[in-house]
Image 1 (cartoon, rainbow, N blue to C red):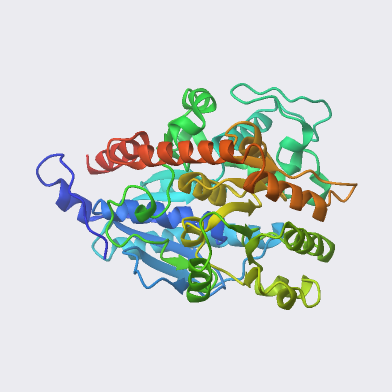
Image 2: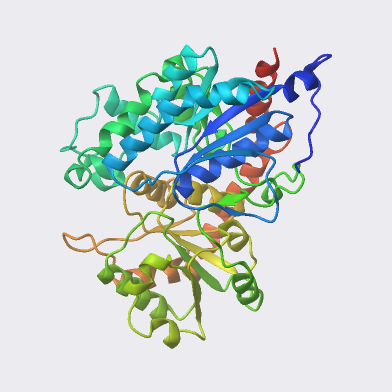
Length: 458
């Protein structure tokens, strides 16, 4: 169980916290699920009862370090397409009043619903039930500003003229924007979901962002003037940052079963900063040709590598690749990413630039090779290379926007041993320090969470 950290308010506040319940509703994808669960752990450490509502057909893998968050599970298939996502949304909105009533009858008054920002309809239900509502944005504030600008009608889709100039952001080329702004045909129904995050944002009691003030200072100031933006990041397990929550060593639940022992044993036998870690998250699907280019790029780089290839993607690897690279590489179906990124042997992270993965790397001081695929990842890759300067972004080739093996090799070598390698590592360490300061006691994110807690007890 997590240690309850006492807070100095007024007589009876701890008792009220223990009688108060928060429902947290993430999307059932790892990059959305993990930050919501960790925020739930943070709130539970303050004395609240927190119930995580999980709607998924995928069986959860529990960590040995049990989370103190209660899990309410509803079995339903959720696939990565518009029709399946709409069914998921409908289920959440239909079931929420029933779940609030059930949990309230358990003796803990439901006072708040914290929900993924892609579920704006939850706020309307919460208001009808007389409880507070707060969205959690699991993409950067900068990306959210782009979508908010489009929602306000001030950015046309598709974008035809560049650079795109948006207050608080650097000038953006077409491929620096989220993919929907230059490739709408591939995901024709998805942009509406993303823009609708802002349909009732001004009605929310709080608006949480998994970021920290110094990381996105300018755009945060602009958005704070429009609604109650609250930075609470990095929301990763406490052991990697402030170490104030007992046994908070990982997120607690996972949609995939990690290969813990094999990863640790292999990494322990490698020298400091000698390993390239490669992972493209839980959703990205690579073509067989792109997987071949990645494999050959890793092989020719001649570095040790740990590559996460989901079981469903193993068949796309080149024939005999695992056997041929066994002296240099380890291919696993899933791992505890934070344990890997925090290991002394990791020299760089080849990533799809999903926001949760990006925040983890920034928080742990790991330089990156950005290889974005879709949605917000392209913009995050822009910031990794040109704003935070903690790595490089691959260049694509041809109409298929393929990343060739030579480019992959070049980028890995630039981050691991090139002229700017020390500069990338120095900047990564800078952001690691600032991330820790933000979430540590008295930091900007810690104060934001404490303000929310205090408000809940009034």
